[in-house]
Image 1: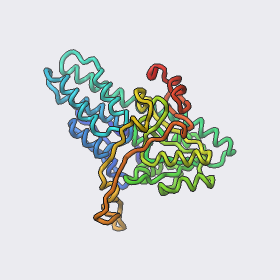
Image 2: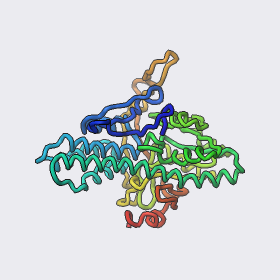
Image 3: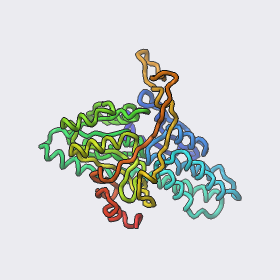
Image 4: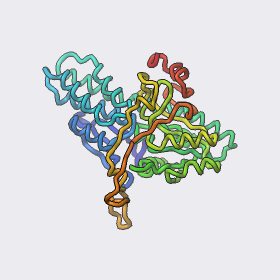
Amino acid sequence: MNVQSRHYRTIWLKEPEYRTVQVINQQALPFNFEILDLHTVEDISTAIKDMYVRGAGLIGATAAYGMYLAALESGESSFDNDMTRAAQILNKTRPTASNLAWATDRMLRVKYSGTLEQKQEKAKLEAQAIADQDADFCKSIGLHGLEIIKEISEKKEGNVVNILTHCNAGWLAFVDYGSALSPVYAAFDRGIDIHVWVDETRPRNQGAGLTAWELSQHRISHDLIPDNAGGHMMQHGFVDLVITGADRVTRQGDTANKIGTYLKALAAKENNVPFYVALPSSSFDFTILDGLKEIPIEERDSSEVQFISGKTKNGLIETVLICPETTGARNWGFDVTPAHLISGFISERGICGASEKEIIKLYPDLGG
């Protein structure tokens, strides 16, 4: 996507050496645009854990590039052990998103042979293939999701289509295009009149800081709303469609996504608002059935709830405490939306219902 009219992906190898991974620093957004250089597996691990990069697809691609850096750091005799160790380190950083382990497993399945330099080249090519595939899949998600938005626009006789999204599942959360926002970009680029309601997404405010920034860069009409406003807006007809991303989806359709997604799904069901989840195939986990029982839910540091960062009137970026110093906090990063609340999934292969039968029909080669 474009930043000030220049195209960027969220992650790439620095030319001409191709031995440094460069990423957009999401900690600095929306007030500053910065590029970070990552040189080691430890750098990659920190970037994922501390959310300099975040989002299901981008976490997977970043982990893949981390495995490539492990190959560069390795020796001839220790190559296999070093790659396995790197995968173990990276897999511990964020437990909920399935894309991370999917990417490291794919990197380990490469048939490494030849000289050390040849093994390193194979690791680089596989990491780049994972990143390219993520971008291609997200572009396809946009084209499939576009049909849903077109249908709503036609029913409204061309009047504005109001779309609500939660957290950030745009191009910043993937290598390019995004999942939940990819249909939005596709619709806008084809002249459909759209407006996006952007949940602030406490406690890290990914909606306010990342989704709103993305939409601003693309000049798409949007408004920031409190996380608690979605139900009220659906009751009063202000929302035509809800699209969110997903960090992990079970074979029967239960979906883990940013905390608060479940409440939006409940409100959408109550008010007959279509609720779609957009995701690439790497976010499906066909090994599990029951999302509530089996998806590990990350609990993050309480300080993310107790403190908030922003820009002061003097132009300074500061972090402030928003509760009494003696007050504790709990900080679950995700919740699980049961399949029966979901209208359907938008993936790179098309749109399917939120049931095991429909998902396996679309992915017989992966889930059979």
